[in-house]
Amino acid sequence: MGNYDEDTAFLGQTGPFFIRLFCLLNLIYISTGLHGLYIVFVAASPAHRCRVDVNLTEDWLEASAPTETLSNGDLQLRQCWRYSLQALRNLSGQGYSPDHVNITSIPLERCEDGWIYSADVYHSTIVSEWDLVCDNEWRVPLASSTLYMGYLLGSIISGQLSDRFGRKKVLFGSLAAEALLMFAQSFSPSWLIFCVLYFFIGAFQISLYITAFVLGSEVLSGSLRVLFTTLGAFLHYCVGYMLLPWVAFAIRHWRTLLRVLSGLTVVYIPLWWLIPESPRWLLSQGYVQKSEAILRDAARKNRVPAPEVIFSQSQVKETESQKSKYSALDVLRTSNIRRTTFMCLLLWMAINIGYFGLSLNTTNLSGDPFLNCFLSAVSEVPAYIVSTFLLKSCPRRPVLSAFLVIGGGFLLLVQLIPDGLQTLALALEMAGKFGFTMSFTVVYIYTAELYPTVLRNLGMGMCSSAARIGSITAPYIIFLGTFNRHLPYVLMGSLTITSSLANIFLPETFGKVLPENLEQMQKSRSFPGRDKQSVEDRGGEKIKEEKL
Image 1 (tube, rainbow, N blue to C red):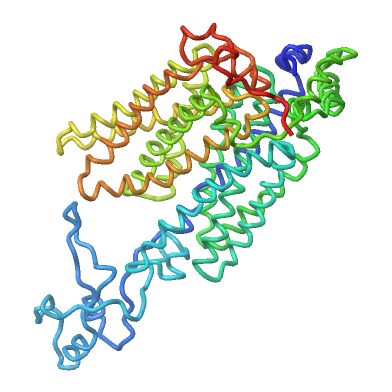
Image 2 (cartoon, one colour; image 1 turned 60 degrees about the vertical axis):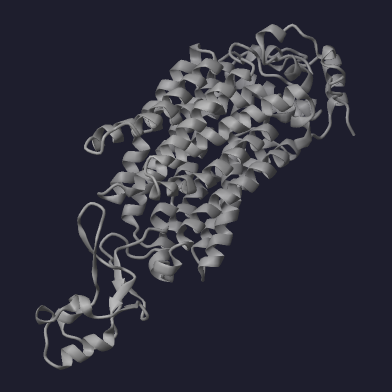
């Protein structure tokens, strides 16, 4: 295949076709923000106490639950224990009041009759409906992690499906499947069914995210591509993320909330006729006429003349000879591609551990949960804006390394802050999250530019799989804070600094056209001194493009 960017340069850098596609794909990312974190409200744990199903006076009912002192010195009713009801009933029957009895000497017992949940904030959640508290509390984080497990599966499969069947089919298939599964999840009769459905929701959700990202990377012009893969996709994800708490605030029942969120997906049905297939992918698969038809339609909408022959006959024959199916083994076949792949996997894993680790830490903040969620989404907007402007004029490799050092460095400084300066420690943590958010933005576009068209979606899928391993690991790293509160910061900071050093081994992509095939990817070198080394000098590692 020849140089696609040069062959389609007649379309220009802007125009109605590119602008409309840019807006439509961004609309899809609003749905990913709406659907990505609804578990925060669906699996919220309302205030609760043991149910007392015996006739007691109001004073004894209030005193039936023992208290405990929190780490901040506040008193709280114990949520998993109560005083023996038999003892309370005997004391109440004898005419005693809680004020005249050493109530702490009364033996304790478990909440054998269930719990009473406060409806002040949430009218119903899966926690209150299925009693996911105390001995069953472990089911709540496991339910949350099933989404990321589904991400792991979807990251692997979606890339192969998209590379084989096309970006558009997988994009809208994932969108429809996610909405239907969310609707079915709202009827879940048990926690187990909820988790099974949530797993597949995660698989289709990440498939939607990655495929839309790759479609935009391949179809949009060079200038809009950078804007889409940075400010466009991530900022519109934040828009959906910011809308979520407002929808959840209005709808306090978890089943109704899921039905409303899934029902909103119907607004995307007309986009099937408005978003085209990737001409770059069609050409890589040998569908030259279909690819040219889309490009001529784009030229008509951009009001520019299209050449009579967009792709030369030699390119057509070359494309047909290259028509093959690629697998995950192709991103590991030579030392050069293996090095690029392994470095990308390390980067994605480290960034996700830090980003989701710090995001999970914010759930411990006091205050209104809906407002906290909204502010958490808003805090990411400046990072996306700053990284967008930097990516327009700065090389990818040093920018990513700088952001990683910022994120990891501030986390390593947290352990040096005295206990009396918690405000400063919080500021450092937020500065670290700012660095991770910017790193998130850069690594997406950097990875998309590293891989050729024939492997781009597959490569993005593998990297996203590594990211999912990081997001699954993040809660356990945060859990280490129960043993030493500085340990999570040390681990996340050290891992991030290490990944920033590994980043220097990746090739630079700034100012270069996207590679179309494996041969063009092979021309990129990780060391400046080896950039002039030819593929043949690699000792027989040159990839043969023609495969059965």
